[in-house]
Length: 136
Image 1: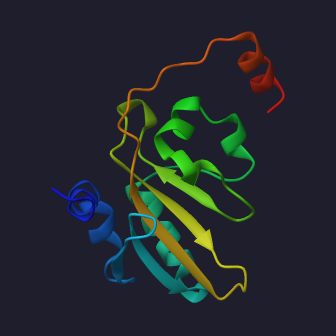
Image 2: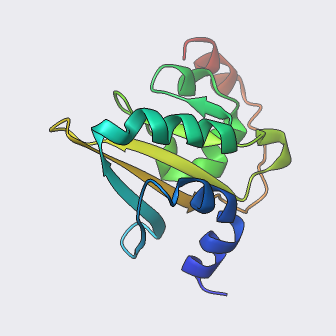
Image 3: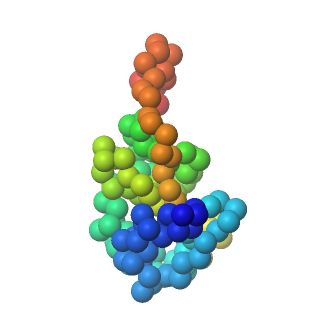
């Protein structure tokens, strides 16, 4: 199964829930399913997305999120203003997550449905790591 087929398989609930509001396409560059829509749909898309993936983080809360979240999300865990990351229960190691990316001009939002990192998470236990978590 190629990357697009895996995302479509594991993300079928997200794709189905949002398909009446957005059009999905595969983005080769980021290896994600991508949907772009105008801000007039953002409340409805956000509400629906929260029903399917009820756990989310923003630029402030991601700093205190469990390290597993950042591991599974990879590059998509680097959030900036107004971006969000959506997931199901992180303890169940979700197969997919969604990145919410408002565009700089304020008229468009995109959502990126991506496969999570499948490598096992190994907790960091060093002193420096514990110290940086305190001040995150």
